[in-house]
Length: 380
Ligand SMILES: *Cc1c(COP(=O)(O)O)cnc(C)c1O
Image (spheres, rainbow, N blue to C red):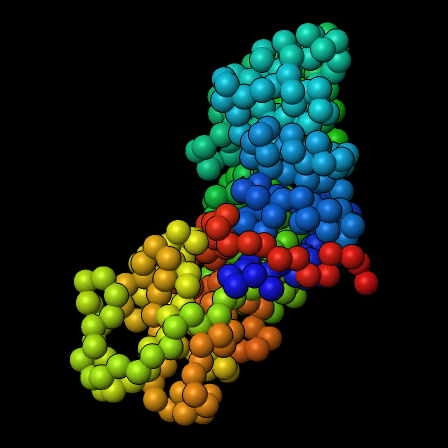
């Protein structure tokens, strides 16, 4: 085991995907593996998700899709966030489905004509999130142009999609409004002669809380990794298991007197004689600097981080009792920041609270300095 590691349990990924496949059926599941699978590693997660029954993969950028194809993954694969500098030709040549909000259409048509092939596209309608996607006002003209390109053989409109803004708060009415706009957009597309087989709008929160968002295909990201998109629901209550455990070992363990200042700024001073443990993870590893107080589990006890989190390291105050219980020293003892909770360790949610952010960001920002170690790569 590397001295510092994000351990990824691929059996958990497979179980989570199986659960989502069951929930979504008869809709198919697109496993969202953008941002290196939210820090879990795109290729191993993509393989595990496909083994467990996901029929599709989704990423933001073409530059994230191409390496999956290069690694031999031939499942349907959608990339939806482009710029004028995106390599549409490489995407079309690699049979990558492309999200299209409007301006991309001529670029995609040109790439398809150059390659003498037909590009697969999914038209995106902005149903209220205010980011990507055609506005409802522009939609009529957009579907007309898309149908024209389809008749010319340059594209095939495989899908129509949108993205939900508040699905993590299931009671909010805006999701109903988004669904109404979505269904009108689909009807308009069909009236223009398009026959999109894949209508999709659900993220993890939609898959888990509202069957009326499922349509033909759902796009869960966070839930695949076993985390809850809801502020008031745990992974376990949703039938999910967190896949990432962030662990290291205590690097230094030493006795200090009362009044010892700890870390930059000396914002913490020991209340009495105690023992400090040094944890070799910091903001260069993706631990938010602001997350003082975040939980670290050592020898079955959870200690809050004291003082400032630095680039490479952070400190926990072990107290004297823990040291006596452990014998001479805790140097080398395993230190777990978060995991599935099997050994009483905290979850990414608790680090999210300490950092004033969401669990998505906690796992996604774990940096490349932390090696990923895979467990259960082979299905059992
Ligand atoms: C990131 C993303 C998803 C997945 O969202 P989760 O909340 O992680 O399930 C789905 N669709 C689009 C367009 C996204 O950008």
